[in-house]
Picture (cartoon, protein in one colour):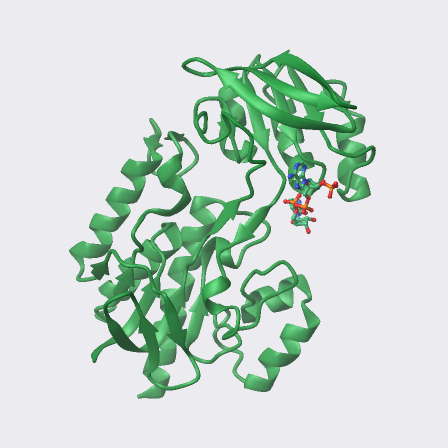
Length: 326
Ligand code: NDP
């Protein structure tokens, strides 16, 4: 069976950055990129908030560059999905449809996905008037009419981000009250640019080259509303199924690291971690030797640059931990 010192699962900014650092530390990592490599940024168009690209860069170009940079220093990249893992034995075991590999350490950079509403036009217009990240895309909507779908903190945050640029921001929520924290609700409801349409569901997103209108339903009646942009903010789902039985997850399914356990006060998981004993590796999960980085850990920021930073931290932690095992 093939063996690697360090396996990295996932090929978003966290995975590639971890691979770059690990490769430059001479760990010759193996990165499982998955059949669809590149993560969420492969679905975006322009990225203007990743430092180092003053004119912006497209999501796919950024990911291709990250991949090349990781490869240049000796990362072995396999475009395969890891289908099963066994972290109860050392070295750890990873399995794909046609290979098995063992690894001394593993970095999980499995990513997350925004939850879609599942209406016609939603996927078709991603990057052309449909967005899942207002922090990333609000600035493209200066002077425009926009809608936000959802009623949680993400929807409130997206709404507030949009009010800085858009002419109007209308929140469409399926119930008659928000789920978001009171303070976020108050900020949204007291903003003169914001309107709320309660008890209404998004039914369709329409357009030609770009989005031009949405259809919502209220009490069985459909209404068509002209718009330039629709922000879907009904939640994110971390991609943690593969490791759900192997490492501690929080209540939302995010992988708990020593650092996130302290920050978010996830007490049960914290207890599990302190039983393991070590404190020097903030990105280590509840299993010694297994690290995690990026959106599969991060319920809060969900940015390419924060994921990349966490990938760097995980690689440095893994390197030091491997040294401590020698
Ligand atoms: P949440 O699960 O908290 O909220 C999702 C919202 O979307 C709810 O209002 C829900 O409606 C609505 N919704 C869910 N499914 C659908 C659907 N199919 N159609 C229409 N509406 C739907 O997710 P968030 O991403 O907002 O937040 C996740 C976690 O992250 C929370 O713990 C939150 O506090 C945290 N967070 C914190 C932030 C901060 O502190 N700055 C920023 C962003 C998130 P309903 O109300 O009916 O359930």
